[in-house]
Length: 210
Image 1 (tube, rainbow, N blue to C red):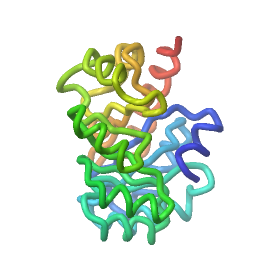
Image 2: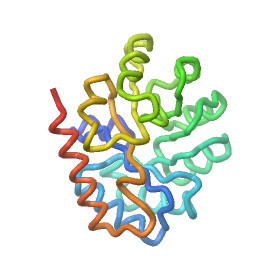
Image 3: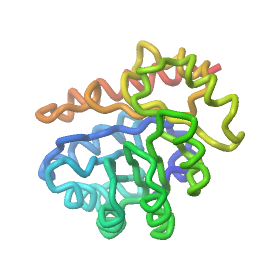
Image 4: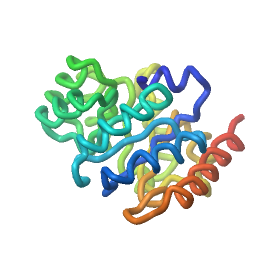
């Protein structure tokens, strides 16, 4: 599944970032996330065996969730991600070559930006989903300001420091979605603990609607 497929089925636009996850545990954690309502799952490429973890989740969960890769900072990583079956690419930066190659490979792209210059460079490279990273550094007011100048169809996802306590504030400012890493999953966390935190996130997102 791709991001739009998941969103079309009514899932919250919440990306779980499983940095440091081990391949032997990733399917159980992915199952816990999907059952809790988080159906966008990212394995960063600075995790152990990211391609193996992505492939395992694609096989087990690919009909119920969009599985992607993060920290994709080179075109060869984009190719490795696509070969593993990943359907979306996330990066901490804006690299037009990485964006272009990912799009060529049929993946959705979520490049990371902080400044207006970076945001417009990402849009020019073909991105319509933009990852504000780190999301908490400049706050929700910055989201509103950047949204005022971006194209109407550009969607801002806030990643880093956004969670149940401030989801509503960021949604009022205009974020389309969020990505959550360490506060949702840290190496060693059990599927049960991840499930509980995921349910809290989904509930907070739902409560912030309107």
